Image (cartoon, rainbow over all chains, first blue to last red; front, side):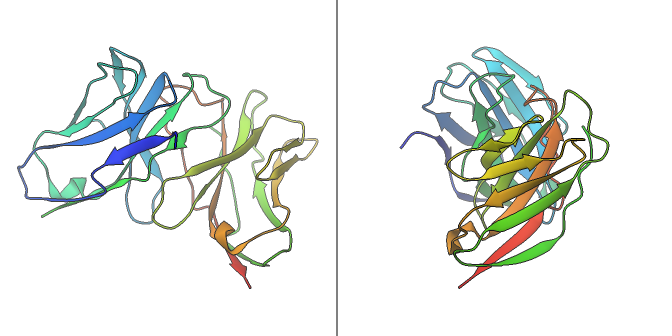
Length: 114
Length: 112
């Protein structure tokens, strides 16, 4: 089925470890973004991309890197994991930066940093 | 983006219409009303959006008052699978770089 695929679904890291959260979409969407959702809170934008080769920072970019080498993939890298990065991470995409038809979200990656 | 106010929770009987209200009294002329929902442990799901006219799609209907200060999301025949937290968001389209500000939302419980 078409949509946004995130892997892994669950991950436990030790403080200081690095890892990459994967996000792929097969809808030829130009716009992709990463959010984090902490318990009982809304979504906060980490990084976003308006097309291949173009990325920019969102509200909470520190500690995270992104790249967009293809239209389909938008990986999120944690450089040196900290307990404050324990959260649920969602990848979202839309047809273009001014899409009027809403975002399509992945099912999330639940990350615990110990 | 304008702030929204939603009741924290609502119940609805299965098969009946669920009417979820949202107040957005500070909405600007170029801001749209978007509705998303989040079923437990899943990613948010886009439902519908509108500017000033009422809108309907296969999932729901959106009724926006004439002064645009409030709106109602209608699920015409609620099922158990519609149990979720519903978020009303007011913003200028889905502009790149703007976060989606999900407030508290309304937790809808559909009961058999």
